[in-house]
Amino acid sequence: MSTATTSKNPSEPAPTAPSGPGVNFLRVLKSEWIKVTTVPSTVILLAVTVLVMVGLASGAAWGTVQLAENVGGTAAPSAPESAPAEGMPTGAATAPAEGMPTGAASGEESAEGAPAGEAPGADPTAGPPAASSLIPEIPSSGVLFGQLLMASLAVVLIASEWGTGMIRSTFSAVPKRTPALLAKNLIIAVISFIVGAGAAFISFLVAQPILNSADLSLSLNDDGVVASILNTGTFLALLAVFSMGIGTLLRNTAGGVVTAIGVIFVLPLVATILQNLGDWIPDAARFLPSNAGAQLVMAGTTAEGDLTQLQGGLVLAVWAAALLIISIVVTKRRDV
Image (cartoon, rainbow, N blue to C red; front, side, top):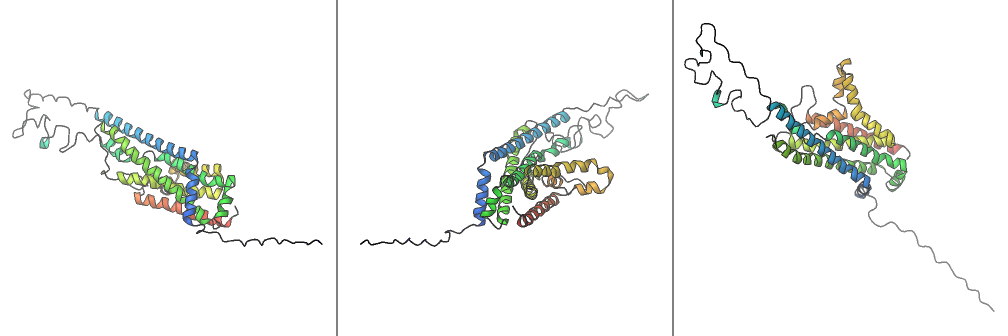
């Protein structure tokens, strides 16, 4: 007699809830930071951006030195000795008038002991006014190239995820989508600020010995220098957020880069060409992102009719915030 034995399958364990705090903004931020910093091409591009910005600032410092030497080395032609009037004794034209100090008529010494041809209290090592006015803006002179690369990088970082399909994995991990987009924008803004302000400060250090060779000085105590260095980073950060909004809306790398460059560089050029067609064109061109950002990094006196440094920063911030909000709203409503 055989005994049949039956074996019962062990019951399957009930699924357990995942341990840990789950997805939060700090974890999303960390993952986006890893995405950016672990790609070698991105790190190389950022390093090249800093080097080129510093190189352009060095060239601006050298050009300022050349301007100072050319203007300072050009001596004013001496006035011909005036001939005595007919019937006047020889030397009467150059003789000092009665009661006038010796040498005053001949120009040997001017008021308060200053040499002839120089204003009283003038600093002979201060350089010509044209060169001196350019010195405070030297650290930020590489921002033109910096905005080109940082705007392109911002578009590539977001649009490439749609091109490769990685955005599906991102939004699967972060279903609300908004934290993921905010993290991407925050990361590119921080990186852009570090690149811009860091390159401007290095440019300041490199420009000092170049300017010292022509007895020109550049100091952090000069009016507007520190603000210009920091605002170089602010300019690139806001422009990167603006460009990432364009890339998020278009979802195409090539189209996003072309559109961003067109808005940043081409539109101001078109406005300049067409400015004679109406007074409203130059007035409206002041509020373009790149033109407003250029005022943000200004270290000198604002020209009449231009935006002030604060106004330029606020205008660029409005552009960046508007594109960020629109891109978030559209992304939440569209399929990936």
